[in-house]
Amino acid sequence: MSDLLSQAEAVWQRVVPTLPGFTVEVLPSIDSTNSELMRRARAGLMEPVLLAAEEQTAGRGRVGKSWHSRRGQSLTFSLALPMAPASWSGLSLAVGASLANSLHPDVRLKWPNDLWLHERKLGGILVETASTGDAPQGKRMVVIGIGLNVARPDTEAVASLGDAPTALPAMAPAGLAEILVGVTAGEVLAQVAPALAQDLLAFESQGFAAFAQRFAQRDALQGRSVQLSDGTRGTACGVGEDGALQVLTEQGMRHVTSAEVSVRPC
Ligand code: BTN
Image 1 (cartoon, rainbow, N blue to C red):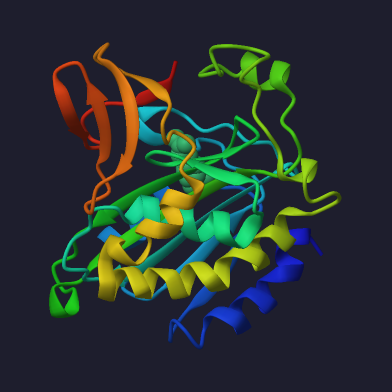
Image 2: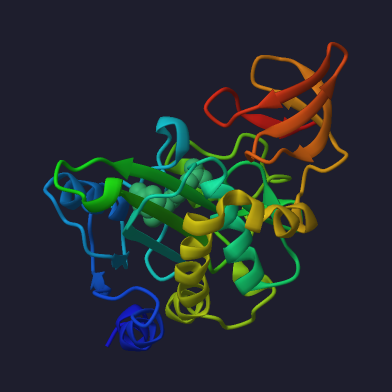
């Protein structure tokens, strides 16, 4: 039995009390767990489901990038559930705070969607929503995709796949095994999924406010010089109530939303 499959039952047992109707699926290979759950959502699926894959052949990252992962060396899964929060702002930050909390005290959050370990990218989050005509009580299906490096990725292999980290080896990705020696993808899934389900319900009822403090404690950019993708430089000053990054620039405080720009420390 595969490592992910061996944990599926435990994950289901621990999540179903939080999300009635919840199911867990593990596939050996799929184009993208997010794409698959978005297809199902558009076709009318309204039940909460966690889909994990041993391998993705067309994994997707933010802003149209691809997401590369290698079988047995990373955890790739998506969780779909119907939600109707008063505001969706800050959802991906709340997911990041939940994951970091479950994983390890050293894990940091790089606004808006990255998990960092010791200044290197450990994982990423891709949040998508689908409106379905027959959704009850104004709910939308949200699909939360999570990719986490378990083994430290082989940078040369990643680079050869394209969309590689630009500054190698200084920005070589991190892997959870650096701090959780011998951990497997299935064990990581069992470690993060139950709290994630509970935190998503907390987000639905309380919004990002319930996560602001946790995010701030893990904020990798706090007080650092950053450059926005439009070239503006400034100092990162935390996030606002809506999860927007606050950057102090020469022109004053700028509230940066994730749809607007990407940001990197400089
Ligand atoms: C990013 O850092 O750009 C976000 C990466 C998100 C990757 C995960 S892996 C599981 C899920 N399926 C996908 O195709 N993408 C997300």
